[in-house]
Image 1 (cartoon, rainbow, N blue to C red):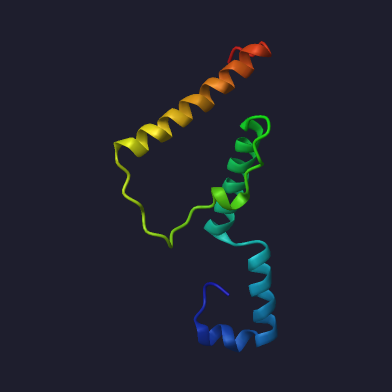
Image 2 (image 1 turned 120 degrees about the horizontal axis):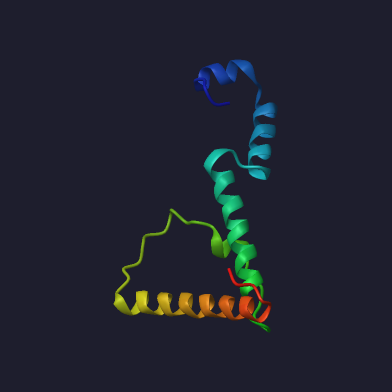
Amino acid sequence: MMGCSVREAQARIDAHEFAEWVACDEIDPPGLARIELHLALLRQEVANRLRGKGEPPHKLGEFMLRFDSPRRHRDWHDIKTEMTAFAHLHNRMNRKRAKHGDNR
């Protein structure tokens, strides 16, 4: 229960109801967690639509932000690899559009 102290929440609901709220939050996370989940679903959908033939489908976990792991130092080689992969993906999209007559 947001918007009240722990003592007020304990006075308002019992342990069983609290467990139900926890279960609901796990199924449909509130606030930023819900937004992040929806964004990850969108990123997964886009990536799966753009994957090449024979490539396995992407999993949702690949697109969830992780705040608990330390950031790895990236040097220029890493950035070049990422930008090259992005350029290949971008060019593949443009070829698909051209093939289907989409001139966006």
